[in-house]
Length: 75
Image (cartoon, rainbow, N blue to C red; front, side, top):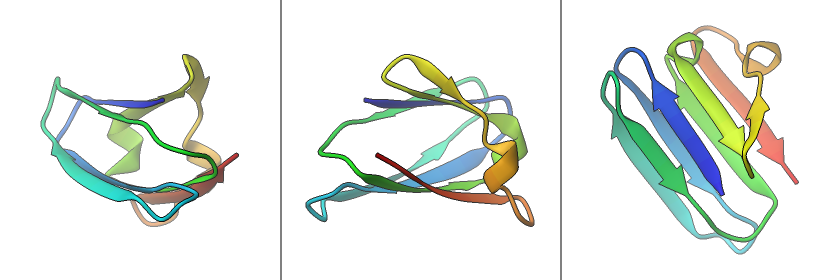
């Protein structure tokens, strides 16, 4: 399970290992939850304002963030 919470407006796109995809706009103070089959390809907009958890473990998006967008794969 992937959980995203945002302190400012942002967006998330997730594609799981079988190709199931989902995306969601996340408003300030709201959460988004995705589940599926790993690995997950994740893109997060306005990433500096988003906290992410994978199976209840915090994931630091900073190493994956370019110009406001984080791109990573979780296995």
